[in-house]
Image 1 (tube, rainbow, N blue to C red):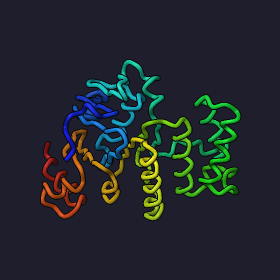
Image 2: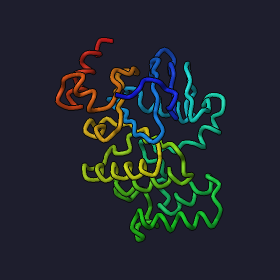
Image 3: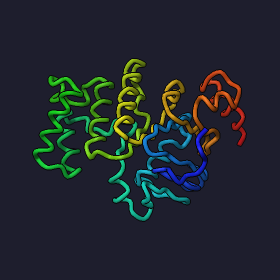
Length: 249
């Protein structure tokens, strides 16, 4: 089981709250992400997963609480914290009317890469996407190809930490498995990864999982440990049990 101390965590979330008017989307959650691990955020739609990621990224103002990214307070130094982070949104973060090549050129430009580095990135793209596809309009490409391009662009600034928001939504099981192989490869390169999903079968790939329900953390820990602790046969059974027990809260 993971030590509860947050001293070694590269992301520290403490008492995080997000309100939209009278609605509380994220309700006083605290957790940490250790350097080099994959943390899986599991929860149904509306649980608060995307809202949490956007607050970590500095895209949403925090109502209460704090987020510390590698020692940087996101509320006080959003730009500096953002330099540590790569973000892939639910909709793949791409411009659908541009080609993969044009998307890479654009995101390389706003990341401050030199012209030579932009050319290098475009050449690297050909190892991710078939060369004959890099000039096609992104909106016309299959979801799995869009997914690969979106992950590629999120890695252009070479961030230490990746925030992946439902990256496998809308793709077939084989593409999902291949994508998780990509995630493992990034972990081997020393990246820290926080990935949200509502696909229960995926979170068993993660080092640790956090289950969110109605803006609250209801379960947190290593999958195997949690299965044994709660005396269930799978993460799916654990998830259903935890949600059922917290439905009235």
